[in-house]
Structures are given as C-alpha cells and as structure tokens.
Length: 216
Image (cartoon, rainbow, N blue to C red; front, side, top):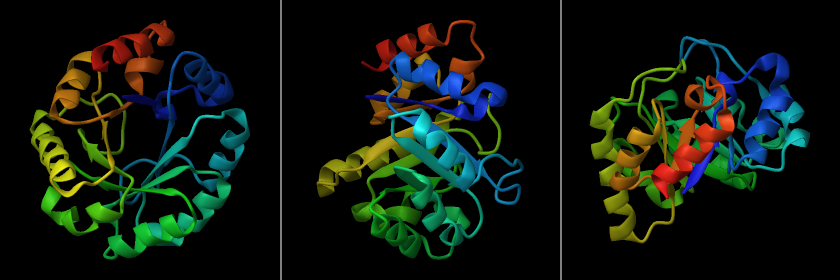
C-alpha cells in the first residue's frame, strides 16, 4: 500500500519544504497534478516545475496529466524527470498511442478515468499499463467529497487484474481520508492520493500515519 501526497494542496511558496516534509514522514510517491485550464478548469504545473522538483526528492514523481492532447507533452515530462505519467482516456482519441509513447521513454504508464467514465472504455489498454488511476472526484480542484459510486469501478479493475494476470497498481485520487481509503482498499486499490487531508492539517506527519494505518 502506497501513499502519494498531492502537492496541489502544498504551499507553492515553500514547495521544497512541503515535499521534504512528506518524504521524511512516510510518503511513497509525490503526486504532481498537471492542469492546462482546458481539460480541467484550473492551471498548475508544467515540465519546468517537474525539472525543478526532481532534485529535491528521491521519491518517484507520480505525474498526472490533466491536459488536452497529452501526446504533445509526454516527451517533455518524461525528460524533465517524471517516473510515472498518467494520461486521461477522455483527453485523447489515441490513448493506446499515448501510453506507447510513455513506455517508449522508459517511464511507467498510467491510464486515468474520470468518475463518469466506464472501465469498458479502457479495457483494451489494461494489458499495457503499470497503473490505473480511478478519479474519485471530478478533476480540477482539491478538497472535494468522495464519490462512492466509483468503488464499483475499482472492484471491476481488481477482478480483471486477477482474471487476466495483469500487474497494474490501482490508484485512487479525490476525497481520500482514512474512512474512504479503507473502502477503496477493500475494493482493490493499493495507491492512495491525498492532498488537502495532509497539507491542510496542522500536523501533516500525523495525517500520513493515519492514512497508512487505515490501509495497512
């Protein structure tokens, strides 16, 4: 079970401090939410931010591209230092090609689906991915409430993984707190993204510990 704190909720003026804080206190990944203001109604990081973050941490950079036409930027993010690159099935007409591009850069490939997107839509790429991200809120902003209907999709993906001998991790992102993390783990998830739950607290270290206890 892995915890991937989202720096979307960190203090951008003290980003190195906030990354080191979670690394020192048990985080497994650093989750970087990349938004373009078109695919989602928010703008955040670009490849240069990944390049600046890379020397600050030894943790894998779990890079979630919430951008249109991700194929145009995959190489840039890979070369900047991303360890995992996630692309939305909804953001491109060529999801298979996008995932191939990621793997060709020797980076772990992740496919992402929004709450309203079915598992059936990504069935034909499951064999090629290292990770699947099930959005448990609508992407764009932190601090949203967990959408319980997404649990069924986690269960579907866990079942398909066993039936077909796939090796992918199942990641969840949105409204993740100890209670919802337990529900997602029971459904089959093993990577948990949390942003505001960790960074909005007075003691982020304690929040990470509570999440780890909930899923372990």
